[in-house]
Length: 198
Image 1 (cartoon, helix red, strand yellow):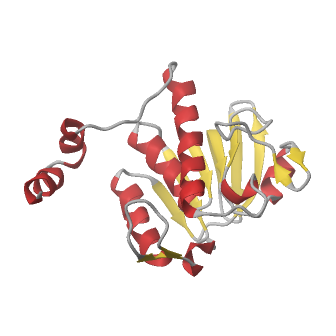
Image 2 (cartoon, one colour):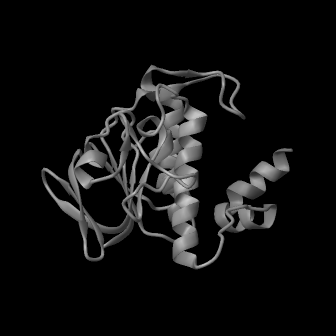
């Protein structure tokens, strides 16, 4: 059983996975690589002057992989159902149980609908932490916004979901704020090399 199952491998899903795995929660990402980021060129993402969306995704995937996220590339989720202990996430080949689920499937809201999440018109209802009406189920990005799709917003939604999950698990308001000493601990020699290059 995983702590967190993330359905979708775009900016929202990978950001959620990065935060949860980095902070000690066993996280699995189901990624069909159908994200609209492949059609994007980022001029409007803080810290990035200009980058192709596919190249951005490759960097983000490497980052989540480096923290040990179980990224199941090409695994299409067919259903998400509530269980006594959380959720069962099924693909054509397998199933996984998880305490929390983050739905990051862009504008495709089918899984949220079948899970029983409340809707406001065509949009999945979510609070400020991206939690839906189904406890411990989160919806992000284009699922909760009417035609307001943007990589920074999606990543922020994924981070908000992850921080709320961490707050629930850790029992206090959780802060994911790294300082240089933490970076050296997490990244080892790589962080030292970056600091020396400044």
